[in-house]
Image 1 (cartoon, rainbow, N blue to C red):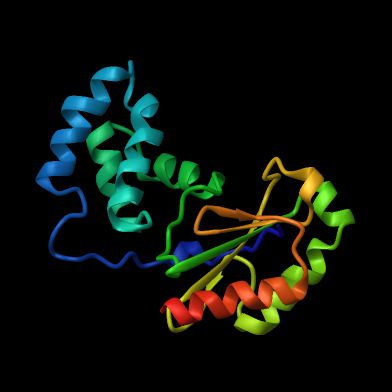
Image 2 (tube, rainbow, N blue to C red):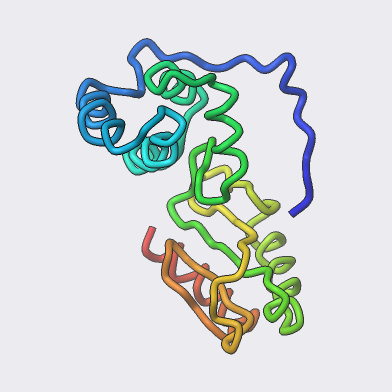
Length: 177
């Protein structure tokens, strides 16, 4: 994955009137998550998983709110969200396709699959189609090197993929809406 610089100095964070950390989420964070950890920083990843599970991603406003609750800076929260591939700061598509980029998948042709998907879906890696149907990710090793190349579609693994099989997967997702 290549690093892409963003002009974050001028970034404006969209704010909605209601907080992302609802009273139910706040109660869970304060009463069930935080007591398990010595520091707010320790509770961060579990809290992020809760928020992402609730919304499907972690909005920037939620990162600010999480920092306030855990007693850490919003920058620390954003650092963790941007570091781990498991967290998303933007809404993801209904179908998330993650193509393995490990050395075994590389040798077995993952790049041809990735290039085909980018062309077919009209998006780049870490982007979502305009209709919100598909997101495309490049993933690290899926632990199935003997079945390379492989990919995940909404967490379900597909092995020994060919371009025609990828086309079938995309078509099936489109048919399912």
